[in-house]
Length: 252
Image 1 (cartoon, rainbow, N blue to C red):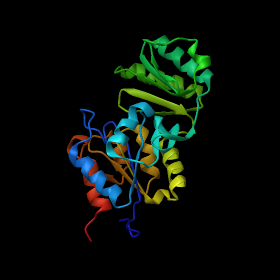
Image 2 (image 1 turned 90 degrees about the vertical axis):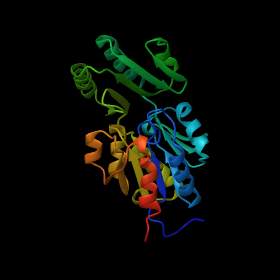
Image 3 (image 1 turned 30 degrees about the horizontal axis):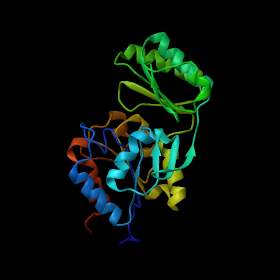
Image 4 (image 1 turned 90 degrees about the horizontal axis):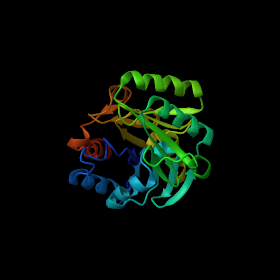
């Protein structure tokens, strides 16, 4: 039964490195406590950099019917299968970012409504025909990453984050998980002060800073931990279950 006295009404969960273990699974204990939270009337919202197709099976596994944020906030779903809003990238910016990847010879990926593309299936003709929503780079070469970052910052019009210390994830400027979660709050009639946002990477930082309670995983990047209100256990040690027990079902 829904508890009107409950301080937090929305639990916004990043997936990789947060909800999912390093084996890309939801642990039984975490699934159990998410079930208890939803049964108590708390909305549980997946908030991920993943595409819809990569995220929705986990929402279905948990039986979630609440809104979902995908592609770092570029898509907000009213229910897990009903699109509410989508922010598209300027195709010229996608072309410029692809040119940088080609110049430096680094791995890239590009999310479009029509599918996910990288150097193995890239076709320049797609630039005009597809609807683009995110671009990313991956390299373990710190010097190369810095050069790419400088080029991206020169371009402007970009929201630059990461989902690991070795990548960059780029959305249209002003689009991030915080804007996505704010839209979810509007759909549900909630305030950001009623949100617990949990994550591990820089693409979670805006949401962690904007939420009523910002939580970093024990495995989170240092900058994320430093900006969080609370640091929970790691993704392999049921950190989300700990958050639910401590902040949603806190003992009086």
